[in-house]
Amino acid sequence: MVLVQHRPGRKLKQSLLTVSALALVASLFLAGGYWMGVRHHLDALTENQELKQQFTALEKENVELRGVAAVDRHGSVLEKKATERVRQDNVQLQDKVAELQEAVSFYKGIMAPLRNDKGLRIEKLSLQRAIDAERFRYKVVLTQVANNSSYVSGSVHIRVLGTVEGEPKTLTLSALSESATKEGAKFKFRYFQDLSGDLKLPVNFLPEQVEVVAQSRGKKAMRLERMFDWKIEEVKSDVGQR
Image 1 (cartoon, rainbow, N blue to C red):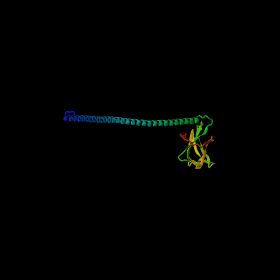
Image 2 (cartoon, rainbow, N blue to C red):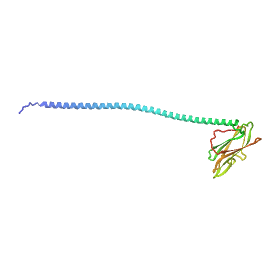
Image 3 (cartoon, rainbow, N blue to C red):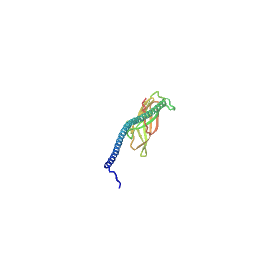
Image 4 (cartoon, rainbow, N blue to C red):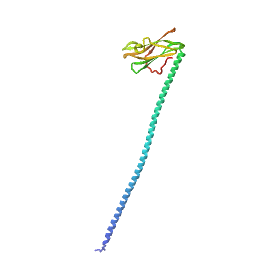
């Protein structure tokens, strides 16, 4: 048998110390957890603020880029329009130069012809399609080459040669145009003159050629005949009487 000194307050003291230690540890854990939570919350707030600032900056940059893109698109459209306008102007200038060159050649041919034929000449025939599918505008240009010190006068007769259902057929201008007469179109000029008008073809008539006959009057009367192929072209300029 061993005799132990009985101390009833010692066990109570140890129990109180143990409970206090556990309470301290729990408090430390709670304080650490709370601090970590607060820190994470502060970090989240800071990150959120930074993200908002980045979003604002990106949104501003996006608006600026859209403005630049709009300006670029507008500039591209303007550039394309300007390029197209320059191209059209160049085409018009080229057409005008070609027209002037043709006019110069035309006048030189009247005043100083390269060929020896002088006097009345059937210079050209132009045909242009009108709004109506069967209606056309014609223009015959007559010239007086070299010998243009006096007027030349006479009449012009026009006939259109073609086919109807494969059969050859010839139609006079008086049968195709309401303004034409059987006596023909009258002319009187010194240098050149154009005779123009409208004609309408029958539905089943297929034109192939146009015959132009010019008959002058006076002491040096002469008869000219010239055959032209039926060819529709754009008339760039009108030649008036001179």
